[in-house]
Image (tube, rainbow, N blue to C red):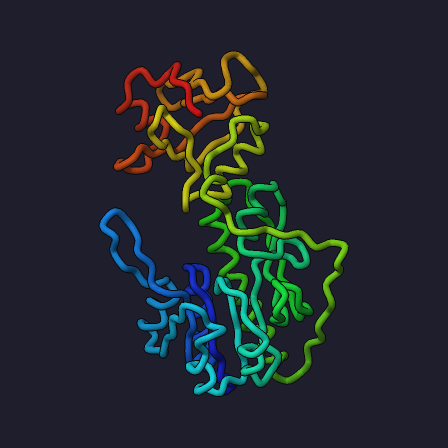
Length: 310
């Protein structure tokens, strides 16, 4: 058991996995801060964040402030040795950061200083990166700008999408934290300043960016699909209806039809014409239906060939 008192701040599934792993590894998590419950789905069901659910499962006190910078008595009362964040989702004020006896730390899912911001996993996939990783850095008020104490790299598989890569990075984050935090508490890690000339940013993915771009080159289109799969799912428009695409591959550099045309929909193949080439759509979903392979989609849809998607 590592006796240092840690308050963990995080929100999505990737953070919940790290929280669980840290507890299993013997870290003393005395409290959890996560974002507010959200209304989700067609039934407007109120749902907790994955981190909130995990905290309850682990019997750890949890706080869900609307604005942490104005509502931080929960943290103050816990007297933490360390504030540790992983994809929390709010900028944290200097006043809150000062509640950490040790310099507060953030786990960030990129090789800093590249991809500072809210969507490093999506951007790494979208940009066709061959490697990424996780960085353990000092939390400062400026976004992801603190000194870096430790880094672990990961090769991105060509088949990886957002969901699979996030899972790999969560496992890597646990390895990073397990190895690095004991050394950090002993003051045996030295922070390295980030090179300002190599900084890039990756803001949150906007709703309109989920609309797949038919003007991209085939590999760039495939990368956009990967970056949005399995959640939230990139889409094209079939008339007024959303058609989600969860998996695609480069098919050819041919241009044989108008951009957006389904040039082939037969057996196991659905081929989409882009502006400068063609891609095979391999996993699709119409509203209210399950995600289907191209073969299953073709079995259930007539006259799809010749359809123009936008």
